Image (cartoon, rainbow, N blue to C red):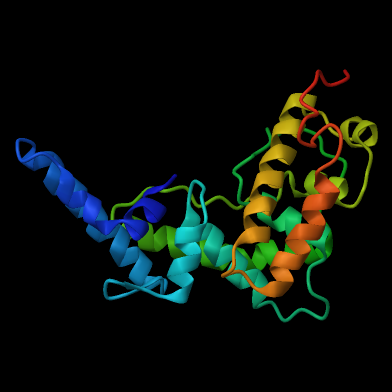
Length: 225
């Protein structure tokens, strides 16, 4: 859980440091103020009051809940001719997982044009958040990488496990971890009330598509070579 969710959901906790540790208390307060400043810049806080967007940040869990919230709002606000399909939504969300592939890795499934367009649009938002964090001395990861999106999109479209593994040089365990993390992220998005109805519906559809053998709950058995 990153400090965005911790500080947003309980700002009073910075006052609980022991009086015998004034340096630690001062550092905690400084970090809290820095996090609050970034949250204000992105509209999650109005003064010390949470906005609706701030409630979205507080309802998510991850390495950087503010960034994930920015992604969800950006996707919901997209005015492309056709909105992202469930599989494309899963792929865009996977781009935030920081599952980078080695330069010499092979992934035979390329992301669709709609996914690449969305990631390109998000790059400006990612840069803005990174700049804001840097100004306030915050180093939370702002992940955005299209390297593995094609695998997630293909799996969510119904490609079989054997065919998926055949088209990548990544280890089966790495692909499994990627899809499990994507599954957990889709599960969050499908249940958060502050996400748009379309995003929740598509997340639920994608969740059902991703949640199958060997990724499905209860299928944690040895994967075939």
